[in-house]
Length: 259
Ligand SMILES: NC(=O)c1ccc[n+]([C@@H]2O[C@H](COP(=O)([O-])OP(=O)(O)OC[C@H]3O[C@@H](n4cnc5c(N)ncnc54)[C@H](OP(=O)(O)O)[C@@H]3O)[C@@H](O)[C@H]2O)c1
Picture 1 (tube, rainbow, N blue to C red):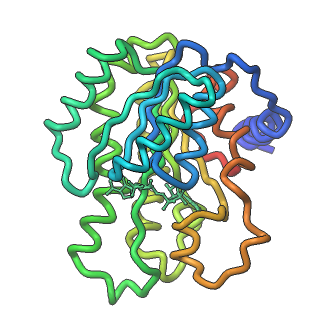
Picture 2: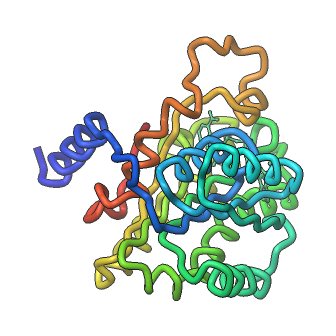
């Protein structure tokens, strides 16, 4: 077994046996993209439950406000809402987002890149240039740009973790998954490149997280009519989301972690 394989098996064992302490994310500020529904919503609630101040991103303000209220009702730290559409946002808007985080919260210790867009599964010959551009923008280019804008805040954090959500079909591309799979494969390449570039910054790590099949609207879109009982629920994955966001994953960077 190579040292790399040994490291990965040890990592998966650590995650399997991981039990987060109640104050794991106390005093940390964490941005969750695509927090309005599905896995992102449950991850934001979970990070808040473990002490984080959570910045909620999405397009639908009503959904974000309902999540904000739920965090407050459950006794979490007051959240913040940053709504924008990855299809429309420009680089300069993302600079403003980072400045707003700095002026309102004064720090950023983690980003969960969770927002994603997938159109219907179809052959490459049916995917137009316009669909390709939207898919690569929402799933890959805009999240990279957001991370870049937040870099000064992440560098200033004593322990910063960036999680990029990938997909089994990004890791193992397959027919009909088209631009979405290519974007997610790009996410995993990006994570490896960024991790190497951050090797000099011992306080920063970045990893790809692969949820597997989870009962959400995205899954219903890609697998209509599928029986739900065999699927994971978002809450079943949260131990891995906590492990990668919290200090237990210090020293782990550039990995693709399967839930
Ligand atoms: N569910 C699965 O089986 C599965 C499997 C593998 C990987 N994943 C990955 O896990 C992550 C979460 O998936 P999910 O199943 O929870 O998906 P979901 O329920 O469809 O949620 C996707 C989120 O992305 C946000 N979003 C979509 N387009 C956006 C845009 N243009 N600008 C800003 N936000 C946008 C949505 O925001 P609004 O609410 O504002 O619309 C929504 O909150 C994704 O990265 C997905 O690729 C999921």
